[in-house]
Every structure is written in C-alpha cells, then in structure tokens.
Length: 278
Image (cartoon, rainbow, N blue to C red; front, top):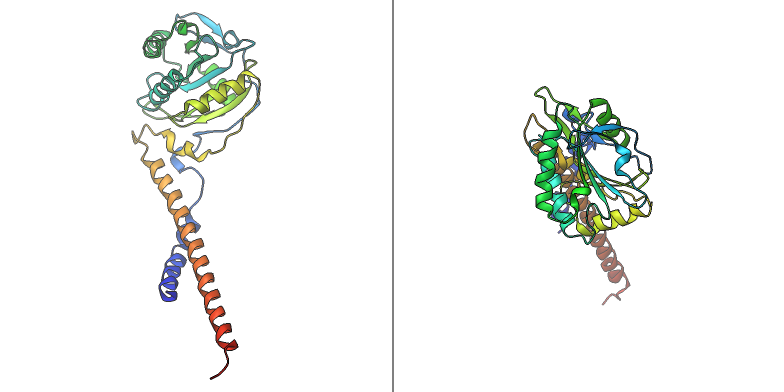
C-alpha cells in the first residue's frame, strides 16, 4: 500500500512544474477583454442613443422609480454569443411571474456604431414574438448610437471588449442588473441564467439592494473569439483549472492516506511493545 502511495506521490511531484506554470490570468489574445465589476456605482443616464424607431432617446428615459433594468451589451450582428445570451434571457424571463414592461425593463445596447435602428427593430420584433406577453413592447428597448455613448456605458459597467481586424468584436458574456436609480446591483455571468437567480436579482434590485458575485471564473468560458470562431481557448483554460483542482484533491487524499497508514503502524508498534513476552 505504502509503495503504491509513494509512486503516486512521485507522480504528484513531477506535476509541480505544471502547477507552477499555471496562472489565472486570461490568455494573451484576450488582453483587454474582460468584465470589471463596479457594484453600487451609477451608470451615466445622460447618454444619448437611437431607439428601434430611429428616434433619439436618453438612457434616463428607461429608468423609473420602481422598476429595475436588465442591461445587455453586445452587438446585433454578433455571430454567436449575443444571440445565445438574449435567447437564454428570454427563456428565463418566460419562467417569471413578473413581466417586462410591467415590473422591469430590458435594454440591449449595441457597441457597434455602424449598426442601424432598422436592425435593432428587427431584433426587437423577433424577441417580442418569442416572449409573447401583452405589453412587453413597453419593456424591451434595442438601442444603437455613437461609439462614444456605447463605450462610456460599457466603461461604467466594466464591459471591456476589443474590435478585431475583421470587424467583429471579442467580448465577454454577462447581464447587468441595474436599480431604478441607475446603480449596478448585480452581475449575472454566462449564457445560462437560473430563473430563481433572475427573480432574486430583480427583486433585490427593485429594492435598491446591491448583491455580490459568488463565482466569476465562469466568465472565461463565455468570451467569444471571432478569430477562432469558437470557445476553444476558454474550454482549454477551464480544463486546466479542472486539472489543477484534481491534482490538488489527489495530493490531499494521498497525504491523508499516508498519515492514516503511519498512525496504524505506530499503533501496532506500541501494541507489540506492550504485549508481555511469552
């Protein structure tokens, strides 16, 4: 038993260089693509955008005294991630008793200044059709506008993105839950949102409360890399994390087993010493 454990321990020692090389920083190709939390900070409500009817609006037009806001940032021609986020958001909202336009608003802001209100209108109609609730048109807002406005809003919520040479954008996946007075209440990461978490986040935000983020490394699994047209980089990084966790778990288990074996041998030795000689 001890020989087998020592063999495994030797393997563990051989993996130390791997552990030493592992770091928790994003890969080089994603420098400048992240989400930096600014909980309890105000977003600039004086920013001007263009709504899906082509009319200029102020961000403050969508904030009311009793309604929280779900903010999504991305762009309407995003080849993958933004649609995943919005599709999942709609599916999650269908499970709630609260309805958009009544208890809360949804704002989707394009970070691409070249996108038009016509495209925003098409997106809005598609998601309203999917959501299929009376009065929801009052609660869904798809906005375009100048790069200065979207970049200021992105900076306020900590949404860091980078334009690629091919014109696409590398960006992360998250929803920003805002209080009725425009403060950041909670960040919901990824492309899947549990209805109970969404319900709690909206209730919390409607009361002006500020939440916290329990687990942020899921963000790495939900950043779209237009150059690779995939999530390969982040899947690999997640496997790295899983590998390290597994090695640490094995190391702890081996240590415990070794200590137990040593304790057993010590007890046997003491028992032998205490037995009378025949």
